[in-house]
Image (cartoon, rainbow, N blue to C red; front, side, top):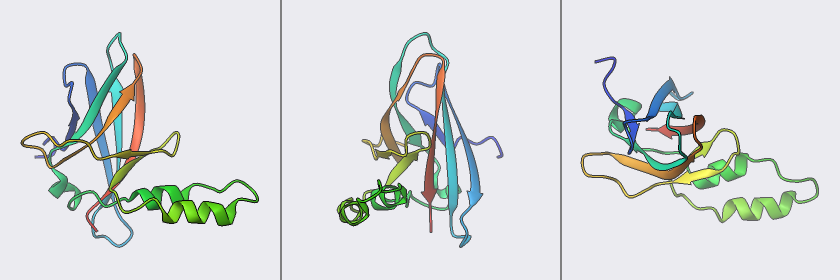
Length: 135
């Protein structure tokens, strides 16, 4: 059961997904790093499909507001930044580790628990995303 599929991309032939999980500090769910690797000679845009969110502690729980508020405000704009963070809402997202951007939920395919994207992957490149599940 250790190799049971947790997540994958829509294009399983040449786009690989690896999930690394650790318990959240409250031990009620997991923080998960998803690494998406594009092994094709072309750029692709695919959703990240989560098939076993139960193995991750439950449905996604990282919110857009949490992602936005974790970004550092430019000097002198702290009050304005807080107003923007408060407007972000409770949409469940993944965080792009490199840019800090949020990737929102995507239309969930039949048989899947949830999906995020679409995610752009350049040719022979990878991207890393963080999500929280359960809690």
